[in-house]
Image (cartoon, rainbow, N blue to C red):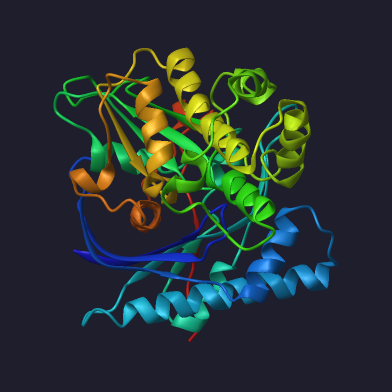
Length: 381
């Protein structure tokens, strides 16, 4: 077994998810055991800086370098702290970093920037660090995301059931995994970003509460409102939702400007704050339903939710309602932690990179070839 630390901070910028795992095998006999997992919050000052940059604020190259280093130091501290939870120390760190900009490919190659330099993490911790996971897939013409489905197929496939693994992070994304009785051929796994999730909802909560709340606990506020179906149907006609996979997105599309456009659209409907939040929650659920019904070869036998949004009981209820009678459960119910699945995944991706195993999925990202993901940084000390 190889001990590896996986690190990621997602689109919601809540903090750094760290997972310490034991990994063994290759891609055909992968074994993963979660030893410890914790979220390390950013300081309010650093989180504010990151959100400002994600929102399009300009900064000088010197300021960018300072932010890059500050994030790397936070990631290194998270790795150092979780590493103390095991007698045997980690041999590798896999760090996704903090995405601050993502541009899907169109007429040109895509571009995706994750801050938190791997070389800094390696030299602070003294542990070889693998980072910059998206770059190789983008260079091969891919979206650079989502990258986790390659791990999902090994951790969450089922002998009989076709499954959708629906991540409800800042952005929603899906991995469609055919049952193990299906041959491992093209289309045995599919994946793409489905649209907005926690990022848009959290922005709405902060705006509607005048900053008193940062998120809608259990979806209770949204559950007290009535969604405006006319608005949801209007929003679903937008280009991103109609675009066929492969596709990816981020705050660049579903950020503050998008929220304010949604609020402007709702002005003629006399909606309460709860109604607005219910309508935005319905958009997340409806975008998932729309994706499944329009872009999957068949509807799944099971839907497994993960990510922070899986704790939103109202959102879960709306997904279930739109996709009845398909069971909607969480990955925790089948043994994979909902909050740390992505951190676990980047530990696995780092492990595969150390073995020089290609781990992108061209059928998911649109890349022209399978490539090894991540750059290896050895500590100087």
